[in-house]
Length: 110
Ligand SMILES: [Zn+2]
Image 1: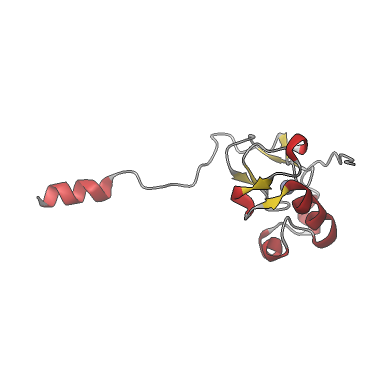
Image 2: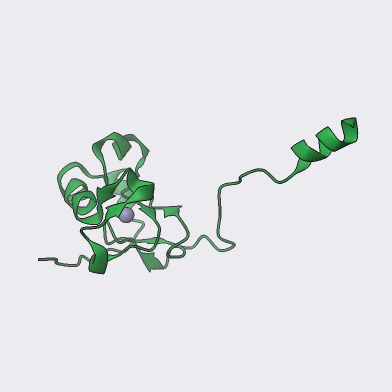
């Protein structure tokens, strides 16, 4: 009985997904910095704190569940105006100086 309980707690718990190679090489759909190691794996961008579920500019007006149901368009606007995908995330993002560690390829949207 006890071992059963112990085994229950030994089960792998929910762990934060980390890619094997965390080198940034993919473009964040929100801030356009090359800040993600992979796309679509719910990695969080260090530059703007967008959580990437694979959504991109072709779905810019769809609400993003992992990002508190804001649209990607709203996230991009927030990044331009306050420096994070949402103002409340500003405390988590890298500093403006820290951004220099990442390449940026700004994309113009309509
Ligand atoms: Zn970003």
